[in-house]
Structure formats: structure tokens, C-alpha cells
Length: 399
Image (cartoon, rainbow, N blue to C red; front, side, top):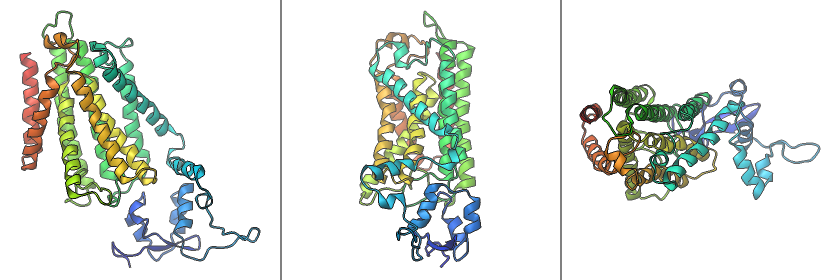
């Protein structure tokens, strides 16, 4: 059958492959496999230059009788996974992360470096001293002025390098895995965070002074550009959705798959928390205060891609994805509350940039809840965020 819920049988290299069970996990999407139902897909399979893992999956889903090796009498379709156990099996799972699409290993090297960078910055802010430099995790008052921008460029390159990987256009509904729309949104909002972080660093340079004097045109321009970045990211995400979303009833978070046995109440709690974090992330970027805020907001954004990859490689379960992703979303809260209790509060109260006023983060929480409630009541997102951006500019002008 060739309907969406039917079997998918195709021939590759003289072997009949039943790809029905694997279709929703296929990185190229189920539609590609369905197109070859009942046909010989040997040439298309070879042209795609599949990885070793893909060849192993062929043996796994083969339905024709396995051929026997004349020398050993063993099945010619035996795979390393079928003959290994214990530590070897675990090692085999992690080897799945090596792909033909990243032969240069640039994406992986950037990923490891950026993950360690997150650990350093967050650790310095949370476990460091209460001085302004540590609360901003070194983004303000760096010994080498251009060092923060080099790291922000590396994080941006990590997100952009994900474009080298082929992902399905349609969403995989069984487990949380990367698809085209999610990847595009992930890149847009990660770049938003890094752009806002860079602007906050610049604002700190323009607006800081020994006596805490009022901000000048430079810091005001940074705040204005931050508002532009926030609104532009919303528009870009809408454009991507209109172009890539297959089902208008879906959304990137509301229809995320959950593990078997997850109650409706549990799912609602996760979804509400995810949605609230999205609004707070936008507010944190728009604040243009502590540069660490927009930076640490990007942690769960970039980590989500890694977690979804681990799910696709069967290294991480669906439950594990949601728990780790939720833990990553909690990190910005820890960083935000940490800024409320610091020796830098007097400087923040006087208006020195790069030092977060102790009242700012607690004030963002009810505002985020209000915006989420209005959005769920059908208020247009631009009708919500345009006044917030204008209000931020007005505050900057007054202060």
C-alpha cells in the first residue's frame, strides 16, 4: 500500500527492505521512502552516499532470506551490533554520532568547544564572586575586549554549520527529532541571542561610567538595535513556518512528542513551562542589561539539537530528552536569580551598564506570564511585542 499509513517495501541491491517501521525515523523523511514503494531504489540509495550506519540498517530491515557466507556459514548480513554486547554495544551506539555529512568534524569540534564555554560562563556567574565582572561571566570588563565576540561568532558558526546535515521536511511524530522547520527556528533564535548578547556588551562599553552617569546615544542605539533584532527574529520565524510547516495544526512545542505513559496533565505542565520560557527568553534578550542573559538563553536552544540527535541515534529516550531540556531551561532562572543577590546592586541602581538591577529579573517573570496569557487568548504576537519594545526604548530614553 502506498497510503501514508501503509507498508513501505522497496528493493536495494537485490534485497527486499521493509522500511515501514523505520519510515518515521528516516532522516530524509518518510515521503522519500514512500516514493520508492514497490520499486528498485538501488541507484537512489547509492547516489545519496549513505553512511555505514545506513548500510547496517538495510540488514536490520531486510525481509529476504539472509545469504550464507561459504567460508564461515554465517549470515552475510550479520552486523557488528548483532554480535556485540555489554560495553561494545554501548560503544557502538556512540559511534553513530560519526556521520559522512560532517567529515571535517567541524560541527562536532565547535559543539564540544561551545558546550565547555557554556559551562565556564555559567559556572563563573553562579559560583563566582558577587562582583559585576563575575555576574556578567566576563562579558563585561574582559581582559581582551574582542574575546567575547570571538566566542559569540563560534556559537553562531555552530548553529549555522547544522545546515550541512540533511533533515526531513515533515515532522517525526513518534519521538522528538530534528526536522526542517525546527532547525530553522533553532538557528534564528540562537542567532538572536548571540546578537543581543553582543549588543549588550557594546551597550556596557558605551554606557558605563565611574559615577554611573546617564547613558549616551551609543547605548541607546544598542537598545534600539536589540528591539529590531527581537522583532526581526519573530518575523523570520513566521516566514520559515509559512514555508516549511506541513500541518498548520502543529507547533514546534505544543505538539512535541512525549514518552509512552506521560499523562495529559504532565504534558500540559511541560508545554506551559516551555511556552513561558519562550516569552521570558524574548524579554531577557530585549532587556539589554547583563550580556550573560541572552547568552545563557541560547544554552537550551543549542542543546535541544544535540538532545534530539541523541534521540534519533537511540542513545537517549524521549523521557530523557524532556528532562534534560527542562534542566537546561532552568539554568537561565538560576543565573537571573543569582543577579538579585550581589554586591553589585548599588552600581546597578545607579545605572552602570553590564550590572543587572536586582529588581529586573523578578519583574520579568510576571510580565512573561501576562504576555503568555494574552497570547493564548488570541492576541497577535506583534500586537504584544511592539509595545514592549517601544516601552523598553522609552525607559532607556528616560534613564
